[in-house]
Image 1 (cartoon, rainbow, N blue to C red):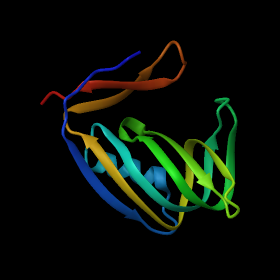
Image 2: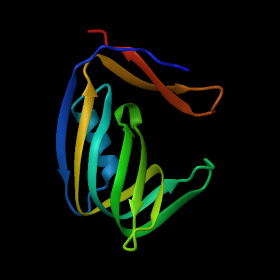
Image 3: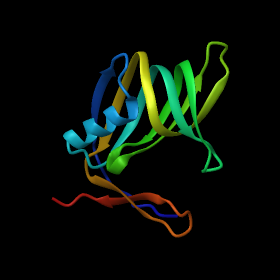
Amino acid sequence: MAHAPVSSSLVCYPLRLGPGEEIKGTLIKFVEDNKLKAAFLLSAVGSVTKATLRMADSSTISTFQGPFEIVSLVGTLSHGGHLHVALSDAEGKMLGGHVIGDMEVYTTAEVVIGECSEAVFRREPDSQTGYDELVVTRKTN
């Protein structure tokens, strides 16, 4: 297990996204524009018109048409991001997966981004998983 304990203070960035904004791209751009090095989602609520998700088998990618309520949206945002979402439809049926993109706001998305001020998130190839995985290091000034 790879972990690096980092004593850090938390900085919060509340955002509200409007109709038609693509959530993942907008959040990644905010993180890059503000030079956040260890950003993650603290909270997210709202609704989307559609979402493109990679499913648990790691190869199936599906686009779902909504509208959907965001029940949960979690993950890291620095270095390209790694997000998972749970969505509910008009009957309360749930679906979820790894966010690829195409998650457009329907009415609103209220998001709070957090950043660990003394950490840096990177993604590096992992020989066990075959994916670029999270590596946490202490920020050097």
